[in-house]
Amino acid sequence: MKQLIDYAIGETYEGYLLIKRATKGITQKGAPFMTVILQDQSADIEAKLWETTEEHEKQYEAGTIVKVGGELHDYRGRTQLRVKKIRPARPDEPVELADLVPAASTPKEELYEMLLSYVDEMENESIERITRTIVEQNREKLLVYPAAMSNHHDYVSGLIDHVVSMLSLSRAFVDHYPLLNRDLLYAGIILHDIGKVQELTGPIGTTYTVEGNLLGHITIMVSTIDEVAKSLGIEGEEVVLLQHMVLSHHGKEEWGSPKRPMLPEAEMLHYIDNIDAKMHMFERAMKVTEPGEFTNRIFPLDNRMFYKARL
Image (cartoon, rainbow, N blue to C red; front, side, top):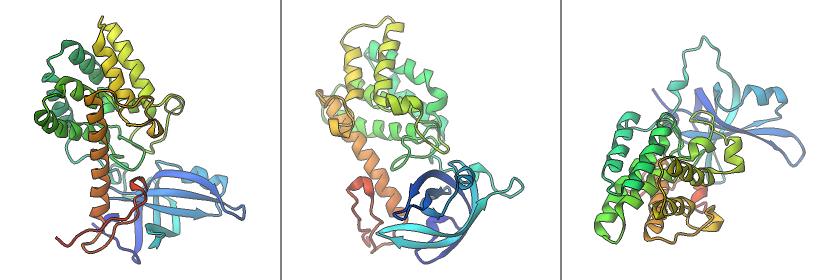
């Protein structure tokens, strides 16, 4: 069955899609409109709904399955769907949420066991106990939450998929650079984004929670590490080191980190996080690009286009 990823600019699309995200806007002339991100399991695409009303805002909120028809076109280097008709799917129509939700290619239970295998390698008892406790406390959500609202690993089980990918990369780095403390780097990778299970609402129609908007996943996890350490009777430098790993993983204040990395392991965590996120963006863009052509502009990558070589 043909999916979004199989369509090219100029082709007509008709089928069922899930509204991943919906936002309101006002044109220069004062007319209301909506920007919706539509998705199936293969890809997502932006569309505009013009001259919308409050009723449309209720009909086309995030998490709604719609039947949509339109044409793919290029708008300033990005592929959009020019909508010609759209309506909410009816309960008796042959489509389910699971048909349209992308998920990690590796089963979530397998990813969880892979994550625990890295915890099992830890030799520092304090770091191991804190990390294992936080992972077990958040197991249910960790198995299904995305790593972000958009841009990278923004699908069911995307968070744990991202973490396991980073752990795999980190093993090569700690083997190559013996100065890196394996336990601290592994723990930093595992813990750095777990706060997102409180920052985000879930894998479907993902938005920010009240805590996510007011505190953010970094602050949430720094507090969690402190609380768990106290509940386990753990004191000492390890607690502060783990908190610093989380606080600094974005790398710079202007990128959202309250502190810049001040440990070799914290610096490496930032690099590995950046590498894995960006390579996921490249992978997604290249899947929908033909050899010899350029990708759409990728906003998080400085709004650049990238060439897919004929190799």
